[in-house]
Image (cartoon, rainbow, N blue to C red; front, side):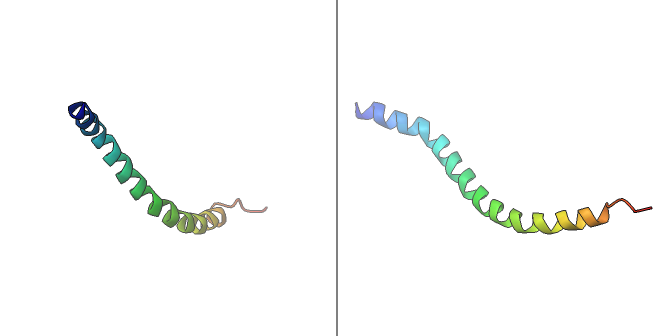
Length: 53
């Protein structure tokens, strides 16, 4: 019984570790990407505006 329990833990450990690393890496990326994405969007809209004739 205990051997089966450890076997399941060993099998699930890589998935749990992967999910931990991915969730830890994405949190700062979302916060840092919100602020810079707003400023270039405004610059691009001014940069690529069509001229008025």
